Amino acid sequence: MEKIKRKILDNGLRVLVHEDHTTPLATCNIVYNVGSRDEHPDHTGLAHLMEHFMFTGSVHVPNYDEALQKVGAINNAYTSQDITHYYIVLPANNIETALWIESDRMLELAFRQQSLDIQKQVVIEEFKENYLNRPYGDLMMLFNRMAYQRHPYQWLPIGKKTEHIAEVDMAIIKDFYYRFYRPDNAVLVVAGNVRYEEVIPLVEKWFGDIPPGNALEKSYPKELPQKELRFQMVERPVSSDILVKGWHMCDRMHPDYYAWDLLSDMFGTGQSSYLYQHLVTEKKLFTDISASIMGTTDEGLFLISGRPVEGVSIEDADAALCAYLYGFKPDKNFSHDLRKVQNRAEAVLLHNDIKIDDRASNLAVGETISNVEYFLNERQHYFDVTEEQMSRLISGMLTEKESNTLYYKAIKANNC
Image 1 (tube, rainbow, N blue to C red):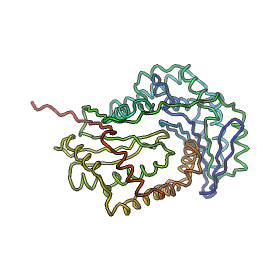
Image 2: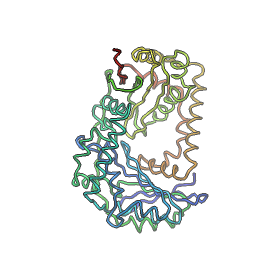
Image 3: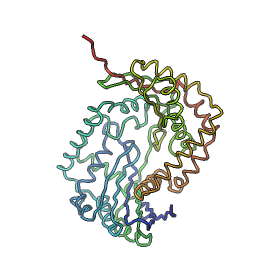
Image 4: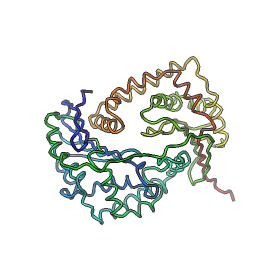
């Protein structure tokens, strides 16, 4: 990737420009450093609702999508527990249109009551469709609520319940917007067939006069060390049981983060992974099993989930998983397997570097978390992970007394 050029405006907006003259396109990415972790426990789902409301028009641009469609642009956004990310991809010669539109909705939204009412209903329907009425939709809602006792990661970006969204009024929306949607709480990335010396004057023109907000003091309740096993069992009208287990892991900037990521690949990514080979192929106790991590800014979770084979109880499947996991000892193939998952991580990084919009997205998120230079060196971070580091996590962190376990059981039909 070509060198990234940076400028910080007087109002605090961090601007990155990445030139790539092999494409006719340009991207405009804005990441606001606000997610569901910034919500009040009684007003959850607000960051996601705010994302929707941002598309309902600003003071000088009443129809956001219509203005972009005229210049052949595509756009979208997403909300996570940590950030809200907006992006536009369009022909490079129309980049100023993207900057104009994004600056206007950073400056001042239209704040129409009818728009808020419509978006509240849209989000409530999304909540019902994806989390309440879909099989397994509430699985991670239940799990996070068990695993996190203090930190706001205990709820997902969709929120705790639909009532929280229904109760949002214009005063709440305005307070959230004016606190977080300011230039000094945002990162702007312009990438593609653009030139730094041409982009910066345009950014100054459209964003330079937007005033910064009040100083943000971000402090999140820190999870206490987990010293006891946590367990929950629920029954739902689903097709099969699912077992989910999780352990607390480090934050995104911790030196162990890349070791945790590789560990999840080694244990639970693909049919050659340890858990799949032992519990699916050999023991035939699970139909599928996988491991993953939550790549959250604050301390996340290392997760294992699997579906027991029909006829195998979830209790027996869990016992077999625990016996293997807690008794695991690296063997002579461990070094080879570590290199294999390191090579896989490198392949993913290379794939994510192909498209200009993916590159711009990664730059914007990386700069928001810390600084983009750290993330430009991710390949080396993965290859710096040692066998000793991996072994320390396996033996020291993946323990039964620090585990969270959810039995998500299928309701059995009564035989009359």
